[in-house]
Length: 304
Length: 293
Image (cartoon, rainbow over all chains, first blue to last red; front, side):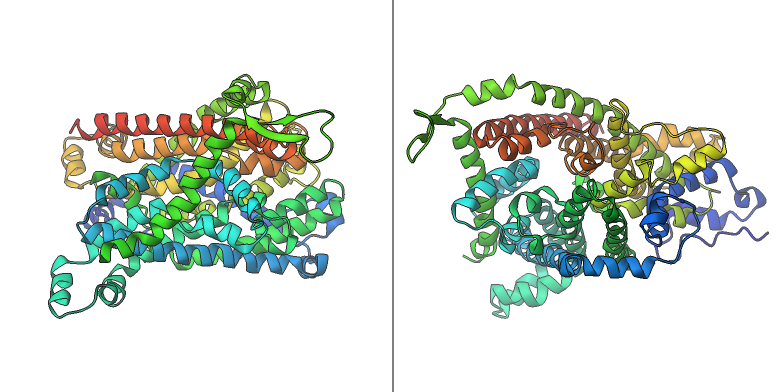
């Protein structure tokens, strides 16, 4: 029978269920459960539907997009990309670079701050430690969107709105990232290593940078990814802060394009192509770094 | 001294982007603009103390109250559907004899990588009859597409985007929790002749209760803050007004009505409700789930 298990177990550690499955080699174990498989596949189709649609739709020009919708792709992808690149002097690619800067730069700064703080909270006993940790945790509960308005009004007083920093600065502090970094530092950096480095006279800063950080890297990648997605997703902050089109991230840029499209529908094909181009890098990042999406932390962290 | 040096950047940022803005919001929320004379010339508009009048008008603000009702209904629809699907898929991923598990796991998690604004754009186009593939597909079987932006349908259309974007992440959290359950627990039940469904209902779901509570609390908090999806869909339809959801009303007040004071009061109300609500939700769930063991 050709239906042996080939899925799963390729990149991931075999689950307990997979192990029992392999142990039990008798017929009943290998028969496919049809209905559950169909339900699972329906879920997959539902999730892939908009992505499949944008792939097809981006190959259509305006007339084809509005009039003859068929599932068969047309050949206008490259002319659509050219059209998008030509729009307002290539502002789309500015948006792409800005997004990389906001999400990538913001996440990098955020990981640095999270690692420093999480490591200190995990490995030092100092006055105010419990207070600091509780304050940070309380910070998780403050809706970030509610902060965007006063942040804007305050920065406006110093004429700092509509700058890259107005979006970057509020994106650095991540209470959740610090919380995760603390768990990682506790789990990955043994106390004995720290103590022996101290006995050898290693300064604290160097101990952190040369010994603790390398041990925490897998966890830091996870924090980076979560923060990257969080900044990418934060629409309200850049939407409020920025007025100069050249500083927009992709999300705000495409939104304004859609807004203009309601009076000039020809822009819709640009929005469609832009949506496709903007999700490609993220999907590559997502698939390439799959093993770092450690959702078990979210679940496992609670058990502590 | 070392630990203090390590935490300095975080503390500085905490003060800068969290404490000061919160303090400033509180300050603004008890201020107002007073216009003297015709409101012309310098000094004609002054900022004066307003007491709790902004809170009073925020709490009686009709657009806010209707948006509040709308967001509660939205949350009541979205959270059970999303978490129900997430749990169903997580159980199917963990079940025996189900095929295409790896493919499905990746596909269902994939929307997590799509920012909500882009997800809303994609679904918005699928809802729009002029560009959507659905009308031509439905007409082949003699059906026509309903207006997905109609007054009461629009809420479901927006909720669908939330379901699409959120199911995968919650599924992974639950699936990871399922895999941490020792398999001996199932083996014993299986030998006793329990069916897969019984094992799922009686053993697996109770064992991952902490993960279910956690995803539930965070989903409620997140859905009450919905902004991106309706804001992105608004240009496509008149059904979604600029004050459709509570946070849209805050934005609307601050930037369209230029009333930062009442917007600040509204922010404070929303923040307090969310803060207190999530604190008690987390505490209550901690008690029930973790101390019961």
